[in-house]
Amino acid sequence: MRIRVMSEGDLPAGLRLNTLAGWNQTAADWHRFLEQSPNGCFVMEQDGTVVGTATTIDYERRFAWIGMVLVDPEFRKQGIGTQLLTKAIEHLDGRHIATMKLDATPQGKPLYAKLGFVTEYEIERWILNRPGHSNSSVPPPSPTGVTAESLQQIFRLDRELFGADRSVLRRPLEQQFPEFAIAVSDEESLQSYCFGRHGLFADHLGPWMARGHAVAETLVRSFLRQSSRETIIVDCLKANSVALGLLPSLGFTFSRPLTRMVRGPNAYAGQPDLLCAILGPEFG
Image (cartoon, rainbow, N blue to C red):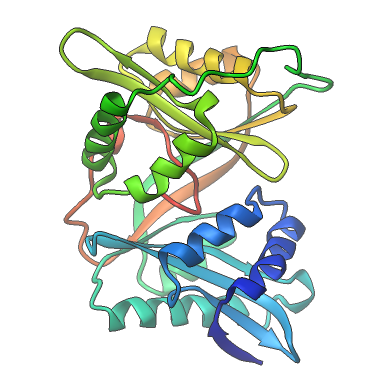
């Protein structure tokens, strides 16, 4: 086996692995990883077959994100995940990025802890299943849900909440999925917003920021009206009482816990207490 840098030709292999794992990423998501970090995404290869992956994204050099640590089920328990994660850390260390973050599943958390990651806060994945649901009769959505001015306000606020600028990822979401981009403002400033995207098997709501129960519900109900998928995913912060109170009332059920973990100094922690839901475990 050998570890090497991922290339465009490896995207089908990455998609195969996340499909086997039941993850929601698409080929477009894999392309985003390579576009943002062409030298920081890795595969483990055996005899020409990709059996594992790991990706990194640098956010303003304030911190880096590690994601998509995947291993083919037939090759697990051979230390492949550890080797890929170690390679990702070495790459980021070599670029002098002192802080690294990731969202850990319960299965991966012990591995990350051994490599120096500690818990920052808890996240919960909630899923809504709507068998037979279709919005095919809904008129095509208008791309004007978020104006150019409000989009810039969202980017500025998101930087404060997340801890770093990620507009390079957020802008394509608004362009590709304008039906899910919503902003709510009062006379003085931006108050709340949400985005979303089409995943492999579900539509994913996030990031989602709302100042109060009423506007939070308005945003989610709008997202649900625009989505034609039977399955909806939301990764909400466990400490956010608004989100956790609202989702069950709309039919969402708890799926699994996630833990946001950090390695190194956390100088740019942002303000996660104001977020209802994250963008996703792969992006932060």
